[in-house]
Amino acid sequence: MKFTTCPLDCYDACSVIYKDGKLKGDPNHPHTQGFLCPSLNSFLKQERITQARYNGKYIAMDEALELLSSTFKNIQNNKLLFFKGSGNMGKMQDVSNLFFEQYGATFTQGSLCDGAGDAGIVEGRGVNLALPISQIVKSEVVVVWGRNITTTNAHMMNTIKNKTLIVIDPIKTKLAKKADVHVQLKPRSDFFFAILLARFAHLEEMEDFDFISNHTEGYEDFVDFFQGFGIKYLIDQVDVSVKTIMSSLNLMKDAKVTFLVGVGVQKYLHGDGVLRAIDSFAAMLGQFGKEGCGVSYLSNSAYGFTNPFVSKALNVVKPTVNFGDYESVFIQSANPCAQMPESNRVIEGLKKSNVVVYFGLYENESSKIANLVIPAKTFLEKEDIRLSYGSEFVGQMPKVIESDIGISEYALTKFLVNSFGFEPLKDEKEYIQEILDSNTTKVGGYLQSSNYNEIPYSNGFYTENKKFLFIEDIEDEKFEEEEGYFLVTSKPRNSINSQFERDHYLYIAKDMGYEDGECVKVSSAYGMVELIVKISDDIRGDCVKICSGAKGLNFLTPGQKSNEGDSAVFQEVKVKLEKE
Ligand SMILES: Nc1nc2c(c(=O)[nH]1)N[C@H]1C(S)=C(S)[C@@H](COP(=O)(O)OP(=O)(O)OC[C@H]3O[C@@H](n4cnc5c(=O)[nH]c(N)nc54)[C@H](O)[C@@H]3O)O[C@H]1N2
Ligand SMILES: Nc1nc2c(c(=O)[nH]1)N[C@H]1C(S)=C(S)[C@@H](COP(=O)(O)OP(=O)(O)OC[C@H]3O[C@@H](n4cnc5c(=O)[nH]c(N)nc54)[C@H](O)[C@@H]3O)O[C@H]1N2
Ligand code: SF4
Ligand SMILES: [Mo]
Image (cartoon, rainbow, N blue to C red; front, side):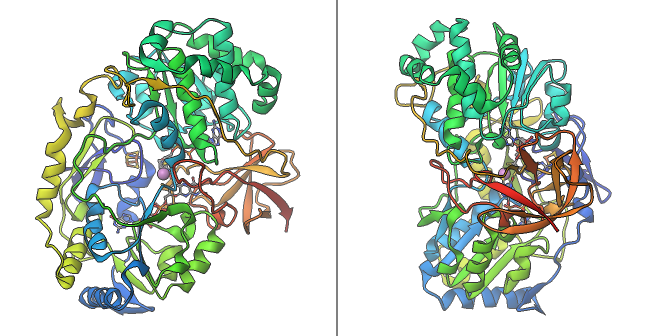
């Protein structure tokens, strides 16, 4: 029996036992408590790439590595793009930085995921810390805001059991059905909803003036700012009843509230403003730095840890990168042909690049387009460690099995630095130890980030004057007038983005003129895809839902970046439907 940690891009970072060729949950872990989700349960069954190939011809790993090295020796250094995704959250994924930086390759900055919201949090708090599970347990009211806990963060369900629950989501999710109040607002209206809550909280005198005067700055400007929005205007924007708004606010009165916010609220140009408005509402109620309260988003898990792989390379913005500008593109742990926005542009760009290298586990849209395919090792076959963006826990990931298939990121990087005569790598365990030693504490037999030895922000915020800065401005390009359905593109139950069992349906409300099983053409200003309809009782009539990982989905989405945070804005688009 050996212990490891799930490597997948997920809030939970489950503690895992590998025994007799099987993966099982670790029943003793205080947060993840023994069960695994459908994705990790299908990990060992998933067909993987077993052999390297070049232009369709199978080759030995040695040959693949020589080809890689000679390709890189024959191009201009800044014409090599290093593109890394989030197929595996292990810290050793970043060891490749050490080669690509010395080589002079171009890196990407920004995010396809949580970057816009993160930027908004940093503006107000200085550093984006998670709320430890140990604090969420102590809260009385939980507000789940644009996060689909039962699907994407399943182990949180235990933590929030028996608490008063408010869900804010345009979809009636499984959790929304169990909630005390479900605010089924219009997509893209969360900024207005946060402002509405602040307006009503002010009228109801719910402010914590002690907290406001000691720990924040700009409250008066915030009041002026939210009072600048008329109540009727705000209610029209969010499209929910006053009764629903008031019942959610009343539940928060004099309670310890935790807000669990997900990426759903910020896949828009103004995503930073949404998170900052949510934070500002929580701050006026004094819900920071105390027991049992706070706002938790996908946090900066690396805060406080040493990063032996930090890179000062030239960066281009990730969601808008033009692959066609590079002679060679090295894709690691990513499937950009499916997961980047504006697939037409991505695929055209990659076709212009002379040598596309795909370094991954599975065949997908990106491995198909690649010239050189190099199989990776799985998390079970290499040394690693992972942090969690959803909790305080740190997971060790020692090698638990030997395998002849694939190569690890460490071994590939070692080959390249040696082949180029660059500074040699340290032993891989040394890097892992360095990360561990920098910021971990053992609590109840499990490692956690030392940042959480105290309640986050209890000693002040991480801004210059240690105070929280309220929002007082928003840049919000309106697209409401545009015709069509809002595109809600959230996470599927049985896959992690494009890995495992992908969900390819178009979900739409009934009585919209479509039937189950029907094929429809979905189009936007960026492209078109044909999908099969599934009627759902859980969706507002003004939206359709297509899960992340659905084939062709990102032909519909805009290759733009958010106002702040260099993040993708997958939902900044409306779509039209046409019958076949
Ligand atoms: N099973 C599974 N788990 C996963 C993943 C997966 O693919 N599958 N992916 C992982 C990754 S990469 C991430 S980043 C996390 C993300 O996990 P979550 O933060 O849960 O993100 P999403 O599923 O994208 O969206 C969450 C919710 O936001 C709602 N939503 C959409 N638009 C809006 C809006 O405008 N306002 C509001 N209030 N809500 C809105 C959606 O209906 C959905 O219920 O999950 C991780 N966990
Ligand atoms: N429309 C729409 N698009 C989205 C999203 C959305 O909600 N809607 N979500 C966005 C978000 S939040 C995210 S995080 C991105 C995710 O997008 P990606 O980062 O592209 O993630 P995946 O689709 O999971 O593909 C990861 C790849 O990593 C490879 N891999 C897995 N483990 C390893 C390993 O150990 N080593 C190596 N070398 N490779 C490995 C696998 O082969 C897999 O194909 O997608 C974004 N795209
Ligand atoms: S994907 Fe998430 S829920 Fe599933 S096993 Fe991994 S960490 Fe746990
Ligand atoms: Mo993500």
